[in-house]
Image 1 (cartoon, helix red, strand yellow):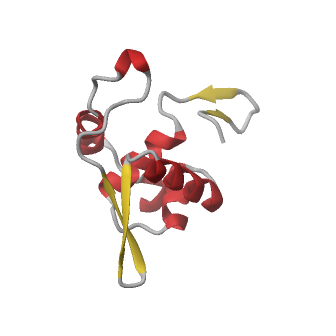
Image 2: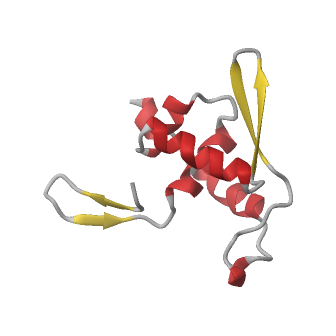
Length: 109
């Protein structure tokens, strides 16, 4: 799923954040979330959430640890954005701006 979604009337809507960033935002709020819950909240498949979290972990943006039978996700401190023009922008600063204002509307219903 890309950052472009289709509305009920068939028109395309775009979003500012990629699925990778949406996953980061969600696990920033819910570090013990299950993949299925992450997927539902972001609007992607469970397999896509697994793939994205694997990519984020492989690139050092997220650390994954086992706590009992569950995974615990932690955003790695000191990581920066990937694009060369934004390479000095700390990822955590951006997450800290967005997450206090975000809510999990799909799961609150």
